[in-house]
Length: 285
Image (tube, rainbow, N blue to C red; front, side, top):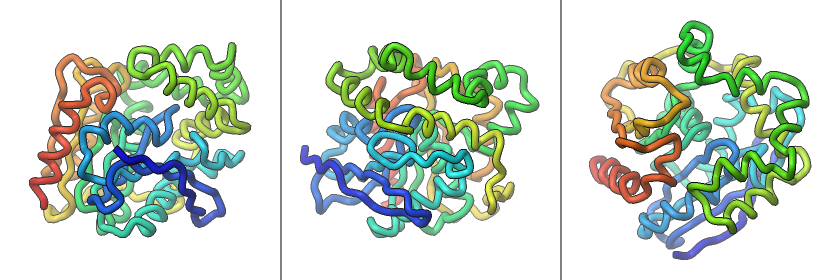
């Protein structure tokens, strides 16, 4: 599998975004958006099972090798979605889009704002950010699951905790799903100036900042992009209520639950995830 690391694009507010690509340069492009606290390299094993497509995987701002602005407002969802739009403009849309965790949240928001840029959408283990905010406020079960997001609202302490003992806690998170070389590469990124703060600022902005162009509409048309939500039955982070509310926003969206899989199907059930993605893309090609 060919790999090119790293191109860069500069988005509308001057932030430089690192972009990795996997697969043949002439393959059908698929934009894949990672979650916290990863970067675009997380898609490498899945890309190996999708060897005829060209996976285009940015490091979201505040992560990996991308710039990490200091201000919390730089991580509003609308700004993050604008970064994705800038990448799709370079790739040439509409494209198939896949997102995990925070990347999945951005896919939901991209569908709200710019569905014309999306051919198909696959969300992995993520609710719609608006539904998540509402659920944290109103649903005791989801509030319990999201305690880490509430903790992230504290100043300074969360990023200090993530960096304690050279990011030992984050390395432990990945021990079951990543190789030692992958963890070492992540560790180097987490050590970059401002990155731990940038990653935490995603959660601060989610609960503190209303997007400038945030809409609470649900897609009423049924002829938009095909949407699939892939989740694991053992995912501890998001309950059934917030996922169901997210699915209701997009009529016709399909939900596939992978039995015994946790929060990272793209790493824990690679073959099954690849098969579902292929079927999803082929149903609309």
